[in-house]
Amino acid sequence: MSRFIIALVLFSVALIGNSQAQVSEDSLAIKQAAMDYIEGWYDGNAERMEKALHPELAKRVVFTDTKSGRSRLSQMSAMTLVQYTRYGGGKDTPVDEQRKDYFLLDVFQNTACAKVIAKDWVDYMQLAKYNGEWKIVNVLWEMEQK
Image (cartoon, rainbow, N blue to C red; front, side):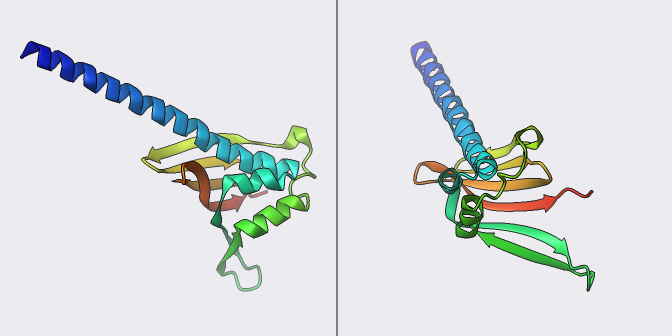
């Protein structure tokens, strides 16, 4: 009986070790996707931006219409974001003003939430492990109030 318990404990420790290694590997891959996104933007590197995004990405922002005072939702697709990046997007931001503060908020199996604080805005990202790679599926963002 004691051999069985020892074997069970060793098996459990091995499983936990493998789980922690996978979480660590996933955490690094999630951060890489977020960095490809924000650094791709600042560098005008469309290939790097595209690598970070799921093809059906929805990037959304809520803003207030100055004429009506009502909130509106604006949306951008992956293709549009990649094109804006290709045309130079964030390249006008001086290197010393670029912010790329990254926070992993949560990971559950094949889904994750992350936050990136950039120069003048904050991006909240939802990511999914898609065909074995972490991709940004949704971004809700807001400009910093001046």
